[in-house]
Length: 81
Image (cartoon, rainbow, N blue to C red; front, top):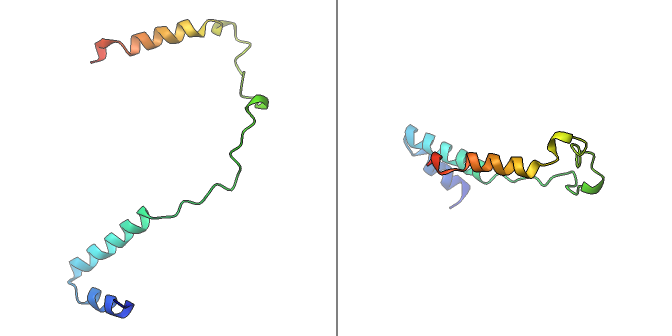
């Protein structure tokens, strides 16, 4: 089907059907929008990142495993089912 034939077919549709075609085209455009690749490199040097180890000096977090396990036990208990 040529573009002119397609336009003729579209023009012959009732107004409501034309709106549906337009909506469908908008849906397809949104669904198939190309995702641009990131322009910035995603390589991160975690060893030298200032965020890593940010809480290493905190004395109240020396036994964080016990605290985390307690929170998980309370939050993930069977009482939430």
